[in-house]
Each structure stands twice: as C-alpha cells, then as structure tokens.
Length: 160
Image 1 (cartoon, helix red, strand yellow):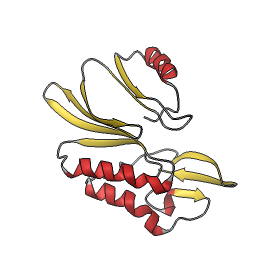
Image 2 (spheres, helix red, strand yellow):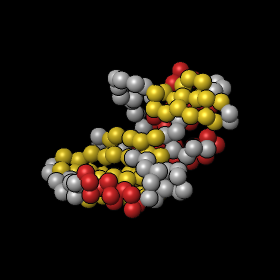
Image 3 (cartoon, rainbow, N blue to C red):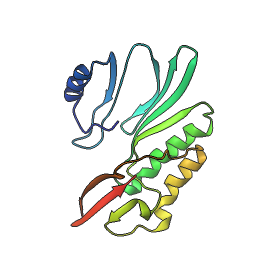
Image 4 (tube, rainbow, N blue to C red):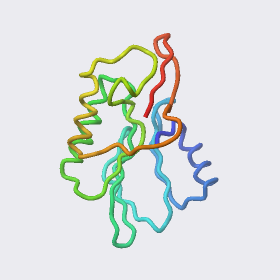
C-alpha cells in the first residue's frame, strides 16, 4: 500500500508487525511509496514494479493468484499512464486478481463531497481500465470517506 514513508520507517513497522519478508519502493518526498509484507508460507514473484505499481504473482501450494498494489499519480493529466499499464496487464490475465491501493481517482462526482464537480469525461480512463480488466469494486461498510483536505483553497472529501 502507499506508505508516504521512508524505507527506514517501513522497516520499523515490518519488525513491529512480525512479518517474515517485505519489499518497498521509496516515496518521492512525501508522495507515494509502496510496501508489501508477507510470511514464508507464500511465494511471491514480482512481475512488474515502478513508483506507481507492484504487480505480483502469489502462490501457496497449488493455489495461485495475482495482486497489483497501486499508487495513482496525484496529477490527473498523468494518471492515464498507469491506467494504460494496468489495462495492458489485465487484457491477458485470466486468473484471480485484485487491485488494491490508492488510484487517486473516482468513478463519478457521487464519490466526492466538496470542491468543484469534475466533467463526466474525466472519469472515463478509470472506467475504461476497470472494464478492460473485468474488475468490479467490492462493496464495503463503515465510513466511506477516505480523506479530507484542502486543495486550491477549497475543502474537499473523497469517498470510496
């Protein structure tokens, strides 16, 4: 998941939680950074990695599945690069697969409160990636607000 912390800090968390293995990608300043922890009963093969994506094949005995850990670019005009990369992976992936993390994107204006509304076309790249990969959002319960803050002097909240 996105860490926003240095590898040194992640190492402290890793030791405190008691996992057997970890892999990180350093953040750029206070933005991004990815980390994954696992134990020895899992075999993990790193298929692809960069500052926005860890694509993993995980196996345990005869079971096999994929997980992609995502940190979407905070700059909207650059998000399509990651979404295209995920789409290219998803076109040929037929086994069980989960995408987890922070895409820094939403599917509609209904998923946000505050700030200016986005034009409908601004959601299309994210929607296309989900469709291409045959992905479906898992429902959840509890507080749907995942962050709140100020951007361009306006308060804003995103909802998942």
